[in-house]
Length: 66
Image (cartoon, rainbow, N blue to C red; front, side):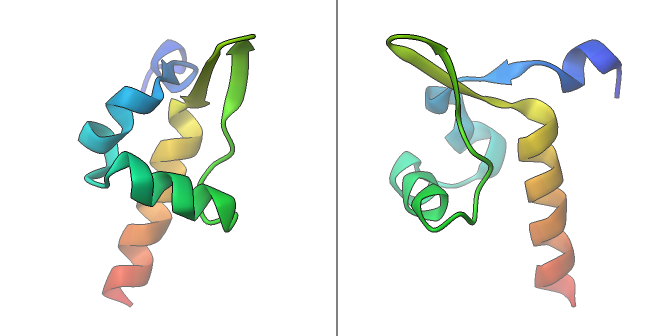
């Protein structure tokens, strides 16, 4: 994947499409430190680094298989 795409920010509303999980499930996982930490973009906006979400998704894939 290109460097620019890996540095992309995913907004919370887009996470269900990226992960297949609901926003509530993602919130619960994040509270248990089982999901990448959000980053503050401004006083009222947060997002997630695409590289972190993709690494998390890949790690879940390995766990599910193994």
